[in-house]
Amino acid sequence: MRAAVVVFPGSNCDRDLAVALEAAGADVTMVWHKDTGLPDGVDIVGVPGGFSFGDYLRCGAIAANSPICQAVKAHAERGGYAFGICNGFQVLTETGILPGVLLRNAGLKYICKSVGLNVQSTQMIFTEGYSTGDVIDIPIAHHDGNYFADETTLDRLEGDDRVVFTYTENPNGSQRDIAGIVSDNRRVLGMMPHPERASDSGHGGKDGQAFFRAIVGQLTAA
Amino acid sequence: MKATVHVMLKTGVLDPQGEAVRHALGAMGFEGVNGVRQGKVIELDLAEGTSEADVAAMCEKLLANTVIESYRVELG
Image (cartoon, rainbow over all chains, first blue to last red; front, side):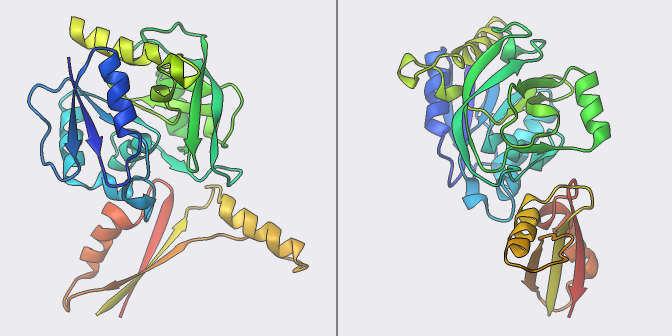
């Protein structure tokens, strides 16, 4: 199973993401923001956390217009699998692949701590290793994680079972406690919490391991 | 030629930074500040002949996120 991890100037979770995917059994290739295409045969693209392009203008806005993101967008439009964590989620909303936007945290503070997440949907490769209703502990580390979309979009996300994770205690003001969502074809996921930071016993928690194992297991079987 | 782009959060989108500024003004003793909205001003130095449509395209594609922001362009 081949995965690509995108690297922007200012990405800082790219190697952690690669380690988590490799530990789950993926063959990982790093791709640079100036690359105009993805490596041949890539099954899934991971967009990592960090501060791409210094978060200038808006988080993810400049990254979303980089050459590699045009390739990621084309990959997603062809029905390819992709996911974005933290800044990667912001990038995917800025590309328009996922709806909504991540605003400044309601409390204005950067928050770095482990939070409880309710697993709301398992009807996708990403959460196949969990059960609906599970509560998992995953770290967040963001200043702009306050999910916002208009009421119609929020109703549609909930109605179509596209809210993947919600916070047990909303830390940032996100509409409807949303921590992660999936695209309408259920193949592109965005989430603010960092499963790659809870994937090894050395991390102090392993609740994120099932996320990567499910991705690799599902795409290897497919 | 110059263009100035004003980007503001749309009505109904919570502006926590504006709210913090409003609270600070109240705490400083300025009364009657009912609301504060914070936005961005972007100055563009453009080649002569750049059209207003070009600037609008820049706003739509990069300078503003129209999910949450509105923009206004002043040319000249």
